[in-house]
Length: 187
Image 1 (cartoon, rainbow, N blue to C red):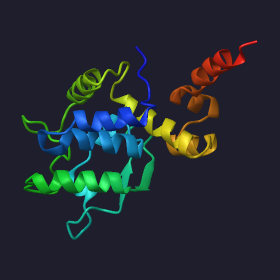
Image 2 (cartoon, helix red, strand yellow; image 1 turned 135 degrees about the vertical axis):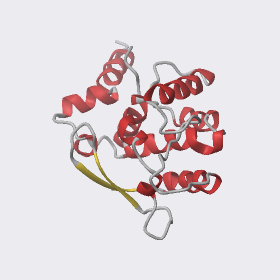
Image 3 (spheres, rainbow, N blue to C red; image 1 turned 90 degrees about the vertical axis):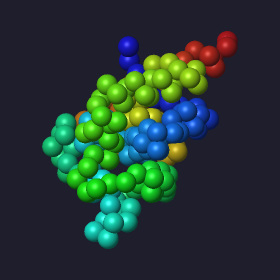
Image 4 (cartoon, one colour; image 1 turned 180 degrees about the horizontal axis):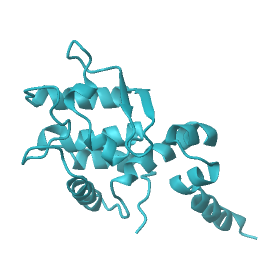
């Protein structure tokens, strides 16, 4: 089963609401995923110190090395991410900056399978299908594409894709455009 982007902004809001609780961890995972385009492995590997500046405040940007590509990545954190981080970290007691940002209840970092289960459960509760951990990254790509007026080159660069064809397929625009062509013709 191929997972999909969440295209509807209302469904994104519903997902946030469905993920509230657990001290804000699950909602933060979702918010960071759809606003940063980080792969789930990169999200789950973040420590508390990665999102704080030297004074202990929420950082303005994130500097990291992508696990899949090995490339350095730096990007600003938008207000949705900073607000979710603030809410989460103000409730969580951290002994040290090296603790996993997304800690499991049993200790250590949340696993990929745990992240998948919590996202899947929330999606099912609001009637979304074909949602998984990679839906976060795909949602980022799709929403940037739409908000940028279809700037495919921008999305391709942000997603670090080798071709525009990969990007279009990844965010589901090929299928969407073909469906539109069939439905709009009406000869």
